[in-house]
Every structure is written in structure tokens, then in C-alpha cells.
Image 1: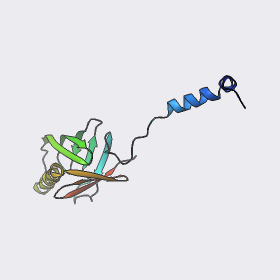
Image 2: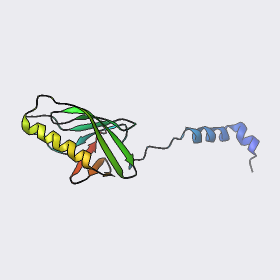
Image 3: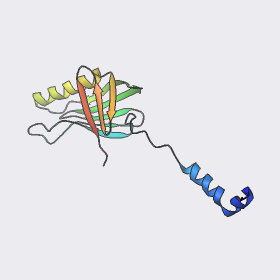
Image 4: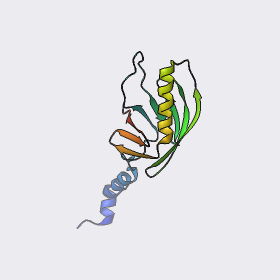
Amino acid sequence: MVSFARMFRAGTVSALLVAALNVSPARANDGFPFGSEMTLDAGRQPGSKRIPNLEIGDAGEVILELWCKGGKGQFSVAGNTVIFVLGAIENRSCPPDRAQQDDDLIAALSDAGTWRRQGDFISFVGARTLRFRINTN
């Protein structure tokens, strides 16, 4: 049998302690993606290369880049409940159809009351479900 003193001198215990202290809990891959950027799971609009995306900060602050418009907002999350509050929006010179699509997307995001995560996909669920892919690059 090896004594505690002998193990300590050999560095075994100190190595185990260092290893244990360096282990940090991994961010849950099923939690809300704070600190992430995500792209709407949709195709490009004719004549545009843009696809709406959200950049979500660690405190829920959001930068939105839509098909034409852009702006800011804030997510509040408790469990699977989500509230999105729109902030300032830039009304860029948008064709009326793209402006309407942006307005519809904002309305659907604001209407969402719950969210769910399936791997790299986040769905915001309300009268209409919006699905976003978390950018992992």
C-alpha cells in the first residue's frame, strides 16, 4: 500500500488536484445560444445575397441584419420562454417587398413566446415558427 505522503511527494495528488481545478463546465449545447451568431434557415431572396442573421451577446443583446433593414433588440430568456424586444431599426432604402419581409420577420420574432434547440438549430415558436442555424465557424 502506498502512503499519502509518498503519493504527494511523487506528485500524483498534486497532478490530480491541478487537473480537477482546471476542468471547467462546458457550455451546455442545449441551452440558449448567448454569445452566438445565427442565420435564418431560409433561402436567398431574388436579387439579394443576404440572409437574415442575429448576433446575440452574452447578456441577450441582439444585432439584427435582415434582408434589407438592420437594427438592435434584446432577448430575455427563462427556461424555454423567450421575449424579444425590438430596439432601433435602420430603415435603409429597401424595395417595398423586402421591407415587408423584414417587417414580417420582426413581427414573428416579437410574437414568439417559446424557443427550442435541436443541435445547431434554434426555433422561435409563436404564431409562426422561425428556425435559425447557429454559425459554428
